[in-house]
Amino acid sequence: MGLIDELRNRLAVAIAAPEVQSFARGLDIEIQFGIDEAAVAIACRNNQPVVSIPSNAPDIALSGPATAWLKVLASCPPPTYHSFSSIQLRNTSFTVTGNALVIAQARAFLEAVFANLTTPAAHAVEVDLTRLEGRYHRVHSAGGQIAEIYSEATGTGRPVLCLHTAGADTRQFHGVMCDPELGRDWRLIGFDMPLHGRSMPPVGWDGSIYQLDQPTYLDWCASFIEQAIGEPVMVMGCSMGAGIAMALAAERPDLVKAVIALEAPLRPRGRRNDYLTHAGVNGGWHSAAYVRGLMSPSSPAEDRRRAAWIYSQGAPGVYDGDLAFYSDEFDGEQIAKLIDGHKIPVHLLIGHYDFSATVSDAYALAEWIEGAVVTEMPELGHFPMTENPPKMLDYLRPVFRALRSLPL
Image 1 (cartoon, helix red, strand yellow):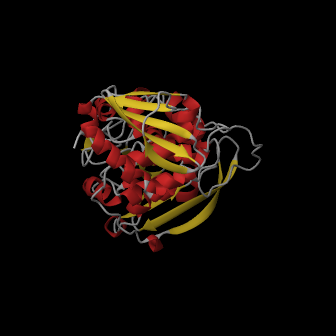
Image 2: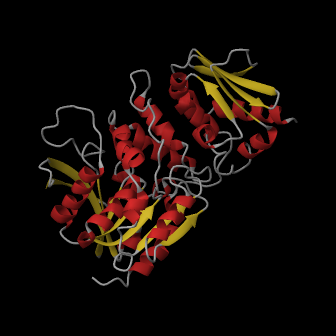
């Protein structure tokens, strides 16, 4: 069987998947996949995708050499061959053409197609959410705003503050927070930033466009630590949460005992997309798809879908507004050089499938922080604690054991 026939067969299986069928609704396009001089297409008509003979005028075309497609179709594709967005944004072996708006409208469908070209061997592990206790805190920021902030906590011992990624909420940490072993020595606490998850906008919000900046983000985190927790914490954040965890260590060292930075960025420019908030694009589908491409193909498919589901529930403009901080403003070099690594231990854990915060980013940051430790996670992507909690815990438990000896 030739490679183009293999791709045709894989596409036929992929478009039969329930989630791919779901994301085809409303699409009226032809997507062409080219291998050298050969091509196959998917046509979406009347909410039904079918494998078809390519026309001369596809709406979207993705083409690359046979050597590159062999990697895409591998049982576990390597980084930048594992998803549509990673190919479009980071893989120079492929060419992607088409109207940007049409690509945005089809991104959820395309990510689902790529996710179903291979079958992951891993299965999701059930998490005991009954360990969690949730409540609201009325938090007053130093900037004068008031918000009813939702938080969850579990475990006993020294407090660990878990900070979610851009556009998401603390549900991302459920698989880690509910681990009985961690819970014996640590009290894990997470909160939804205002406008995220179960935290409503601050009192007096006038409906204007949301845009996060570092001082505001730092203010909410510091205010929550002071008013809701009441003592210094270890801070474990992911992505923008990792960025602000480092900023807390730099600007408010009195509140921070240690930092565990998951997928910490250096200068993640270019992550904002004009179609994250656009009248012509389903915002929930697009935001979820935009982050889905950052996860590892070896992570359980169900957990990856759940990670994307959190993003699909974000309020309009919140993910884009968070990226104003994460992608446009944050400078890891400036922050890292202000951290006193002698007083605040810093652990940087980085997944190989993350093309937003990369392995080279982690090592660059570690160069500026005395004593910082980098742990590479070859099997994981940008949302390790959500896309594969058991594997994330394999990496986290040794870190927590190393931090037990910290003075109170």
